[in-house]
Image 1: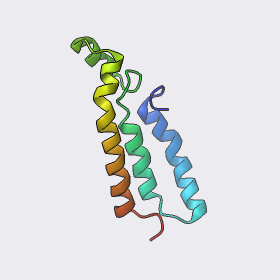
Image 2: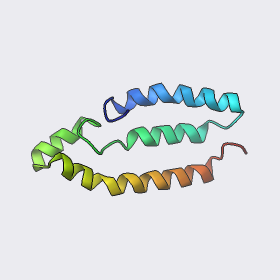
Image 3: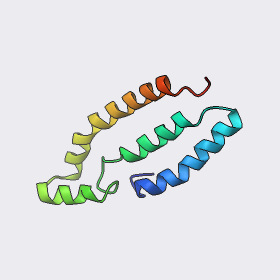
Image 4: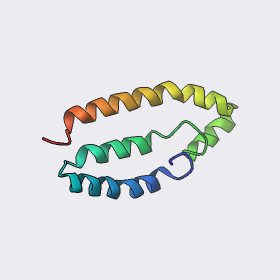
Length: 94
């Protein structure tokens, strides 16, 4: 959703849903909130994700495929590291 909406708006939609889901399961919501924020703030793969990306594309003469190629590895790496770190530091059921 962060590719078509602003990152902060997506966070404001999904954080209450995550808190409510954790509350109904009796789980700790801190880790899930961190995961939602990390997912929303790492949306940098396409020009629609963040307002700064089209400016960078115009100034550097990058194409859409260039941006996706450049951001694919960092996005996957950040996803894996964030999930592993959050699962270790903030387990759902302590």
